[in-house]
Length: 277
Image 1 (cartoon, one colour):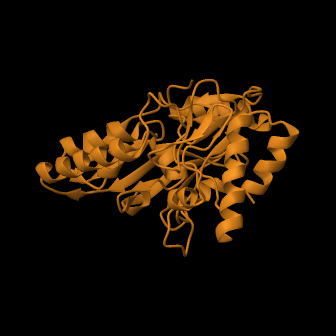
Image 2: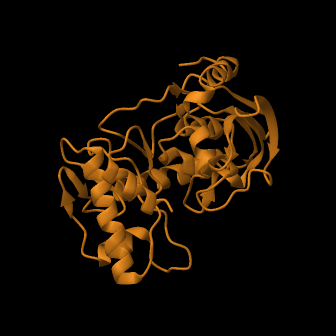
């Protein structure tokens, strides 16, 4: 649990050959029921945010909801969508998180990353980060985000607050709360398709479908909730069943947003290899 980027880099050097896993807020992560054998580094203590006029440099462990509120306090627009995303800035940049017609890359200028294979700090431009839908270069390279700089827009606080409230109401109505444990949105919305992943799953008759203690949420089919004692095997099996049903009915191969960490059974390994291809 490093307290600053220097400690984080020291840990990454120490565990360079052990495939360390970095976790922020834990969103979109499925942890193996058989345990995690790699070193796990928690980044949530590395969370400073320095504002200067309309720019802000934010460390990777800062919680997105906290940053959204800080931007509101400064009268800065661009982070309204973050109020409804339970992530850290590191995770948000890693997967180019977005909602309500905004994405984290919209206002990003550059980022500071650590290349743990080459043992050096790099400064990457927005273009070099290669953003696309739920994607950044961080998914492909041995880069760990240290901080990111953003340029926001000056706007009336009342307008910003109204948009944030609207986003929170939408989330409350369309996504499960913490009383229904879940790993977040399961599948990416497919390209070149008018229907969302949730709508495709619904049209396959899978609303309320259950395997073990995992269940497709009745209110939005792109969420899988834990009804009690769900295992990673339950989750893997239900995700794979959904994938197959949608492929059979629509000839569309959904891609999971979920990241699996930890030891896999042979069956899980085979299924996630297909899911992530």
